[in-house]
Length: 202
Image 1 (cartoon, rainbow, N blue to C red):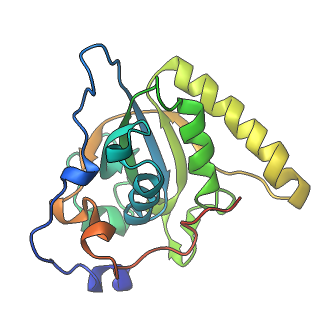
Image 2: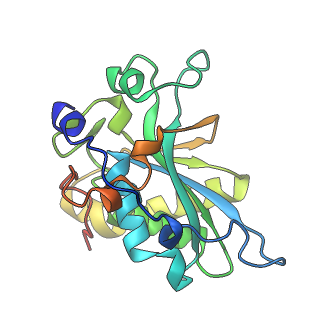
Image 3: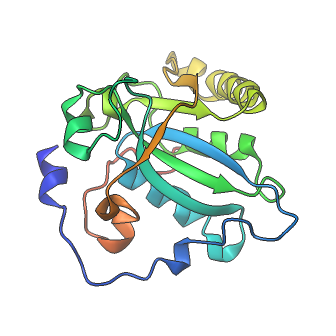
C-alpha cells in the first residue's frame, strides 16, 4: 500500500478523450455494464483499455474505477477507508460495453486471462480483501454466463495444475466512483505502480 500511495503524483493536464467513447455509440445501440475486481484497479483498467481501446471500436465504450461489494452501512467510501479493509469494499472496474461488438463472455474470459484468480484476497504483493478477485453481475444472464465461463476456465487452465479459482461471483450492488486521480491512472502516470499479475497469462 505504501508503494502505491507514494506513486500518487499528479501529472500535467491529460486528454481522456482517447479512452472515452460516447456512452451510446449509436442511437440503436443497447449497452451493458460489466463489473470486475482483480486487484489494484489501476492495472485492471489499464490492461482492459490497452486491449479494447474505445477509439478502435472493439466494444468497450467507457470505464471507471471505483469501490463496490462492501458493507451496506459504508457508503461513499474513500481510498484510505477501502485500503484499511474496514468497509469490505473491493477495488473494481466498471465497464460500459456494446454487446454487439464484444460479448460479456469474452470480457469474463479476458478478466481471467489478466490476473491471478486462485489467490484469496491477494494479487502479487498486494494483500487484503480490497484486492480480492470478484465478478459482480448486472443481470441474471450475466450471472449464468459468468458461472459457465468460470467453469470452462477452471477445467482448461487450472484443474490441470491442481489449482482452484476462488473468484467470487455476486450480484452487483451499490457502486462508488473512486477519486478522480485514480481514473486512467496508469495512462496519466506510465511509470506508476502496476501489479505484476496484470498481464496476459495465456
